[in-house]
Image (cartoon, rainbow, N blue to C red):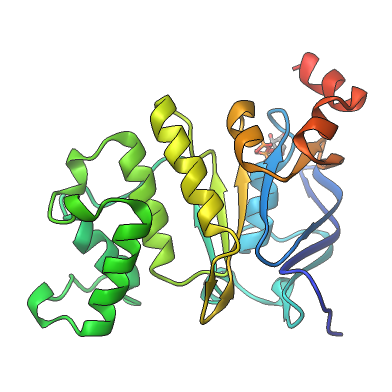
Length: 254
Ligand code: ADP
């Protein structure tokens, strides 16, 4: 049973917690290289959906495929992560006592218990990758500062950089701009837009963003998926979904 086409494919997925259907016949297709925003009122199932994709939560029904070859329901969390699916939670979890450079270095290590090697002894390829990511996230001049001194927004970018060290195919990003300044939000929009579709030796990167800030969603998304009661209520451009009476009703009732 092999599928072709999208990078991520959820079909008729359902999951219940104590008889309550948190995800109810969810169908979602993310194209290779796409930047998709997922919105929806509290309790709509956004977090549960992310948990299903990463293998943290097992659905009761349905199928979840990554690319054409990988049936995610037959894999555990570390196996799914090793396919190149990276998740960023809302709160940044950088190592505050380490420098930005060391944080990125540690993110590349397969064994997280090993302390970073002395930077002088690091091989060239690894150093190049860190330099590349520092430039992508715009923290190259702060590389030897401790992560603890960064602003909230900068910590979020560092954490995205830590995911990029693993050369992901799919980035799942939970509320990236919560608590950011206007200016940080603009830079985050620019960063996520640049990441989606970026080609590496591992293929094109796709990005899925769960976000509450509608202005931000409007500024980045070509396609928005509105979740409600565990399934897709509407999907399409921001203009299309925001003028959909079903969507308006759900948000007014929040
Ligand atoms: P969102 O992220 O859109 O706010 P969630 O996915 O967190 O929504 O939650 C969807 C629904 O499932 C909510 O009603 C929530 O209370 C319930 N839920 C989520 N996870 C669990 C769990 N582990 N056990 C019981 N109920 C859960």
